Image 1: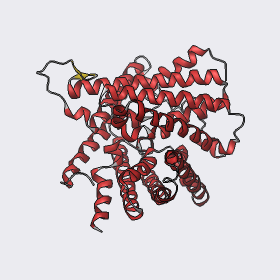
Image 2: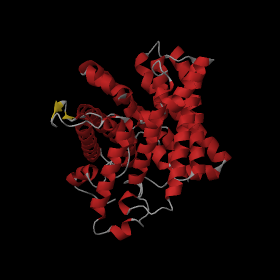
Image 3: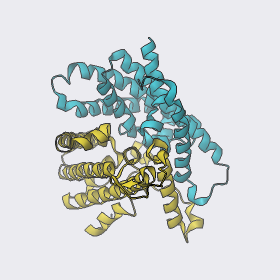
Image 4: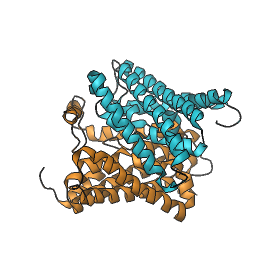
Length: 194
Length: 223
């Protein structure tokens, strides 16, 4: 149990996907203008991550021993199909959310965070439960980063920002400060990252 | 769409619609593997191979792919090219392959590649598609080299592993750590924004966000 907690905390804080590994940056910058949208996007990504982790542990057990060269292709097919299903469900269940997420919902397929999760799970040899803990942690970390970013950007809306730093310039500097802050978690585990 | 000359199609990707600096696509590799110039070059070459190969193939088979499954088909084509380049790098340049780590397989999900397939290669013949992909690849390489150059120079006082700054230079370690990536890109984007904004500064801020060339609006897509 302690191991699972460790994997969760490591993925959420110490090795935060967005701020330490630079994956999932497109939604991080694209969907971080308002907190509610950021929360929903985080939820959608976490959901897809958990489904991916579950599917990948089956692929690792049954498909890849037979055809190792299919690793990348089988992962991406599974992710693309999952995203398609989630997209259809969201469109039916909440058209407002569907519109709010806009182009970024189909782009979850090309969200590197999801594929990175699958590759990592393989590289670390996580089993089914460890994979689930890892994916929930990674999703929570992604959501946390997105919400932090969105709240700071929301407040900076009313500030007087030099013209050249509007849009992306300021966002990059905010991300740099967040990333520096998250480096503080590096000492959380003394015996090397989980 | 009006016909454009081949040179224009190529140059558009390099500068006016630079994938990283203007369209803000492909940020993950731009920030993650640019702590040295060597990594930046390896990444730019690998991405260029996948980009040109997949755009060419998408353009060749564009009439055979049903519209409903086109994105999945493009992703499969891209994933195939990435598998090739991943195995090739592991065999030919094992040290570069180790240094880039998971970011080679992650080329699959580089949005700029799918973006070129969807926005350009799926509607144009082979030659313009390859030119367009090569232009985008060159633009990506420019951005990566710029980032890698600045970060390696300030972060370790060297360029391509050769020490160029005097020994008294105290390296800014932060530049080769994750925050340095965000800082460098932020500085470059602000610099470009200043450069482009001279003269037209007043109306620049009020302009609505433009979608990258050829990408449809989400509402239109959902309909």
